[in-house]
Image: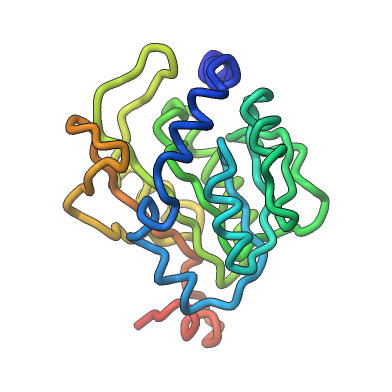
Length: 214
C-alpha cells in the first residue's frame, strides 16, 4: 500500500481533478436510496481522495470523518472541504489515528479502495470496519473489475470473498448489482459491483426491524 499511497500523493492534482469530473450521486446510484430513507448521522469515508463524496454527504446533513493517507491529495481536499467534514491521516487495515469520538459510524464508505488491499490485509481490515460500524449502520464497498495499474497496484476482488469475510465478522453482505455496472470514467475495460454490508441480526428485534430481516 505504501507505493500506492505515494503515487496518489505525487499525482494529487491529477486525481483531484479526475474524481471531481464525475458526479458523486451518479457514482453511488446503487445505494444512495439509503440516504433518502435514513436520518443523517455520522459517516466515515475511507480513502476519501478528493473529498468529493465526503462533501456530497455533508451537503445532505451528515457529519463526515474523511480518511486519506496520501498527504498532497488530502491537503488539496481539505482546502475545499465542507465545514461538516473532518479530515485525518489514516489507512486500512488498522485505521489508527481516527478521532476518539465517535467510536462507531452510521455509514461507512469505501469507494474504489478495496482492490488496493492485498488479500492478507483484508481480514483485519474488515474486522476493523465491523468494530467501527454502528449496530444499525451500513457499510458500502465498491469492487473494481478490470486491469491492474502497476503505478497503483490493484489486486483481484470478488463478492464471494467479501461475503465470507463479512460472515466471519458477524456481518452480512448483499450484492447490489450482480451484473457489474459501467465505469463512471467511461473506461470500457473497468466494471464495478457495490456491496452493502450490515450487522447480522441477533436476538434484538429492533435491530432486525431496522435491517429489514426476515
